[in-house]
Length: 161
Length: 326
Image 1 (cartoon, rainbow over the protein chains, first blue to last red):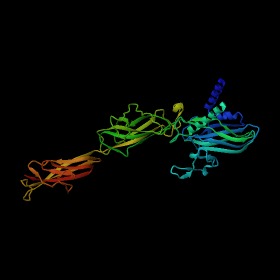
Image 2: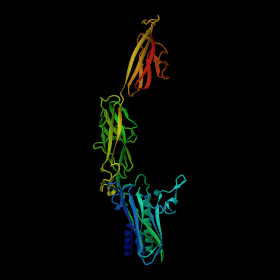
Image 3: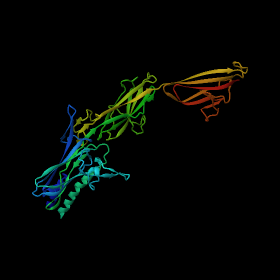
Image 4: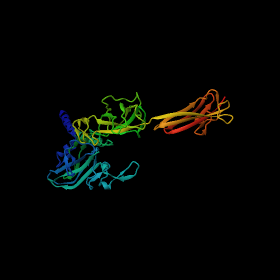
């Protein structure tokens, strides 16, 4: 009884750290996913040339650009197949207009998927319009297979609403 | 079995949290203090079948952007005369967090024909857009607004005294400046730890201060009445004898750049004379003696009265009526 309580408490603490599913699954998963976020800092040099660099998101306000990244790796001995990474966009950001045009996205919470150009949004008056970057609710990447020991990085740029 | 239930409820928790985060309706910029949380989920197949794995969740907090705009709500120059005048402005919190602003009214703007004296700065407490003395709160020094929420606007009145030596058609500007209480500076200036929930506050494109100008223009208008009389006697001459008819002419001359309201010209019928019925005219057009049907009324007892209403400067009206010498 006591032991059960203790275990429950431990699990709850993990939950509060917002990584329960990963923590539970990763124990036996050959796949690791590691997320990070960087802010895009634009600087203009003396000649007027703009340069951008990724920095830790120290001070961020509406209109600032962020890059959300996910590093994946197959640490197992076997290849994995149909590897699909789904990333819901936080509500406070919109997909940046310079996101890759062939990025597979959803504008309806993850029901219908396609490139942005293929998707449309039903408006309040019942008519339909082409989807825009700010309509995007999810982004998704699909890799047919990841060989043992392979790793890579997936990124999407976003702008704080 | 027990463990399974716990696992289920644990899976449910983050899902609910994700929906909560994407729910807020976002208008003009995410509120300061908003947490942006990002988690990626991978599904794949290995030798054991379909699998799911989540990434860690990265969290960044939106900092407070400090921005403000001030605009004049007056549609044009406010017509005034020496004495009190009121200028109306609007202060808008263009930032994404709560902020108060210190207000400064400057009556000495370059190019002024004369300078006013600032009496008070007041806020539109009852929200009707018009300054109501005794109702709208007068700010005390340092004149600081209440904390305005993101995107909130506040109507502000600047009450000024126009000096007695201000001449007709002279103009004067009054500038109202609002400065964020947290601080002002070049865009990008950071006030560490002074934002919402202990986050940073950062100066936006407005520099966290703004000002707007309201204009007063003096319109001093005077009314000059000139009365003249001409007499025709029963014999074709101009003698003042019983039976002679005297025609009085009152010229109402309105001068200045403004206008006068409710201008009513009255005159009594002189003793020893009798009003000639239906002789009242305005600018050559007859008026009835009865009251209420047109601008004029006349009787022997009450004399004549002509209501000219609002008259612009530069206008002259001529009123005539006849009396018989008793």
